[in-house]
Image 1: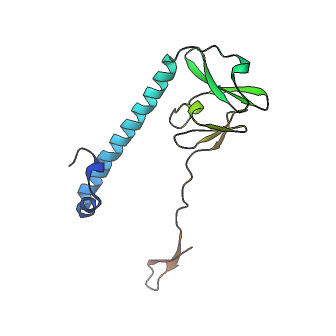
Image 2: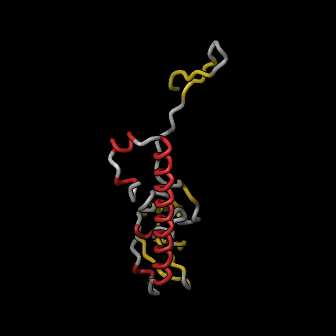
Image 3: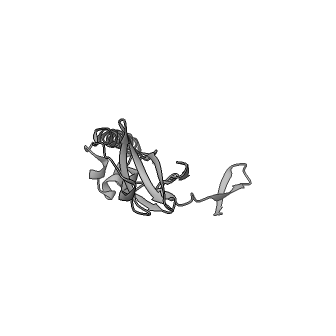
Length: 153
């Protein structure tokens, strides 16, 4: 077993027996999950330790974003149509600082996974990366009573 599944070449992966591949995959997924949790913890700690900023209204340009703090919580400030909106600066998905993303109208987009939020309400407009639709196939009953997979739908 290699220390990281990413160290395998595509050819090596294709030659692994199924039980070994399953074991490697579980190890890789556990590592990936631990790494993601650590990244989220580090982001939260960095925001808690970030210095308090005193922000003046005129410091935020139209369509701009900055941060301030409320206690230990980092707050995103965004100016849209002359009004300043405040919301948590942590993306709900992985805790990424939203002010490092983009603001388009009332929509702030996370720079990590493209999750989108409305600055007026904090509502989730889309949970993140666009995924390709999963391919679907026709299910056909075969003459012998078994299921046969037909054409892609």
